[in-house]
Length: 124
Picture 1 (cartoon, rainbow, N blue to C red):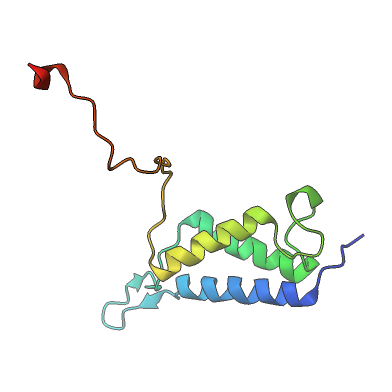
Picture 2 (cartoon, rainbow, N blue to C red):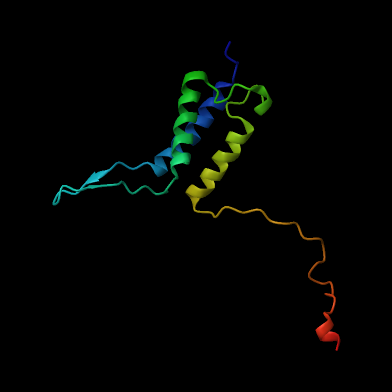
């Protein structure tokens, strides 16, 4: 039994996915002089996984109106799961040209102002 998903949510997700896919997809071109087939130059160079992700999520949204089935992975009325939304945001950031932030450690407040302990070689 299919879930009742808000059609606005589905359209919004489809619009975002298709916009991102269009930025990365460019048709192959044939050089008229040599007849050589050159790969298309898209604005964004997506990895194979990212391209597959975009096409598969697009297909699921078209067919079912939602891209996930397990309700523990997202809200009942949403078209995308929580993790799918995060991945789409990462792909969108890549399309905008922003670098991905890696894992960082949280530094305590005032860590720059603290005096560092002197090493034994400095004490002598």
